[in-house]
Amino acid sequence: MKDPPKSQGNPPLQRWSAQARNEGMEDAELAALAHAGDREAFGELVRKFAGQARRVARAVLGNDADADDAAQDAFLAALRGLGRYDPTRPFGPWLMRIVANAATDRRRRQKVRAAVRIPPQTPSTEAQPDQVALRLEFHGALKTALRSLPERRRIAVVLFDVEGYSHQEIAEVLNVPVGTVRSDVFHARRALRTALALWKNSKEEIV
Amino acid sequence: MRGSPFDHRQDRELGETLRAVLSAEDDFSFVERVLARAGELQHNVYGVEWWEVLSAWARPGLVAVAVVLIAGITIWFSGMSGSTESMVALGDPLLSAGESGLPSALFAASQPPDLNEVLALVMGN
Image (cartoon, rainbow over all chains, first blue to last red; front, side, top):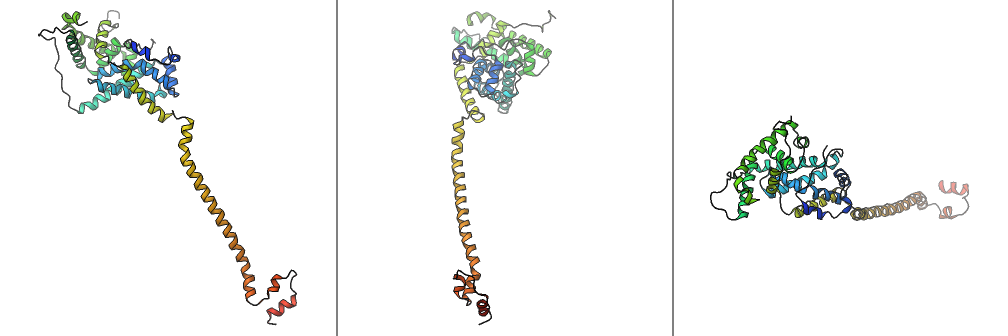
């Protein structure tokens, strides 16, 4: 079993950890303390997994505000359900499963409302001297490419390539066989790389 | 399986790009928001302190004590008045007997009345 998932994308979060005693504590210990009513322990878990949860929710939901609402719902659901968490297993996949479910539920509810389809974006033929604008356009294109993927593939590729979960852990999150996860990651990558290839010439300017 | 396209490792470049696209700003506000909501939830579930429990019970407790006191006093008073009535009831036959002509000396005397006097009164002298 690999280490609990990484929170590489949130360096400022390290500063926020007010409770030194919680630093370095295993997620399972924090979860046990949180279940017993320790608010600081729960806070530490939220700080640790906030970035991941928000990214996974964003991978499912197009709207950032909805994604944050879904991520918050997931944390609160996790708090209520800490008694069902098996401390012998890694906490991250357990939480990410709740996040994915919360985001999926919210997206299903959104489907009722008519969504405006965003057309696929390709590099503009017009001159874009502004690097920021170019970056925004690139991000928009990648988001569109991500959104064009089936939901399960989106979650799989984000959990694998962004968050560093193993195939086995993602299989637990998505409740599918490991082989399905491998296939999902493969196909998602292929689609995303195709979208990225269109930006290959502009990439150096963007990054 | 080493050559399988499904046996892949993490693609750092794609991962970093996706991270940049999906990462939200201001995680601090998000964390604060979640913790505030969780605080409310925890307060409802198990975050209540002992003095909060006591204060929550204080008002209904006082009401309950007042009700018990009023009920007790009422029962006590009704018990007192009930015993008075029963004493009166026991004395009634004697009173009625007195009113029917028996001399009060029969009731007031410290010694038991003479049998002949009682018989004479009952049989109409």
